[in-house]
Length: 172
Image 1 (cartoon, one colour):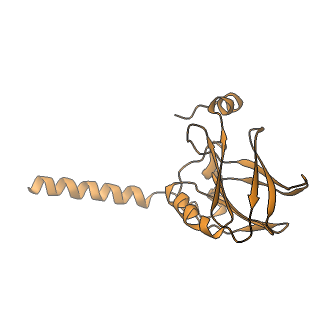
Image 2 (spheres, one colour):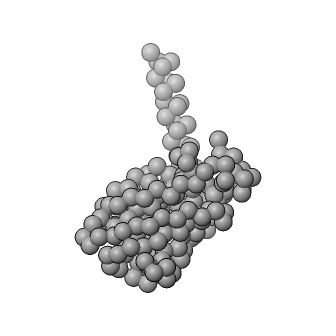
Image 3 (cartoon, rainbow, N blue to C red):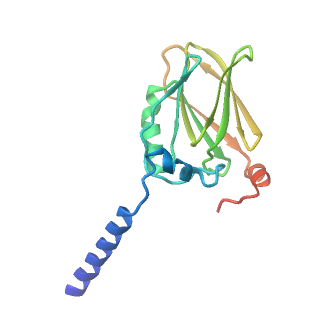
């Protein structure tokens, strides 16, 4: 019994020590560590996420790590659209170039989402064209935003073979 207790205490101390040495990604100095391989989302602690507004479109990118992904999914009900960037295998992608155009094709927003989930609020109801690119490979969607609706979800999926061919990396 004393041996089991001693073993459990040693394990607890080792875990606490490992957690104490986990890097803090909440400052800009360490933000580059979020995307050591920019095409693939990596696991990091949740960060404070604040929306950006461009031409009336309010958006926030996040979802790196399970805690931040859960936070983004909880916040999705406050936004009209949740975009998820992933391979068709289910592996999340980051460093996605995202363009949004109005129904006539006029570009109204351009950004790079450094995470696999993007939450978006539009200035008005209407039809919007979403163009997302990973390593130059585009995926396009048309979304119709109705007045007062929230929580719409669109998956932007890339074939794994295309991403592997472009980056030369395999995610295992």
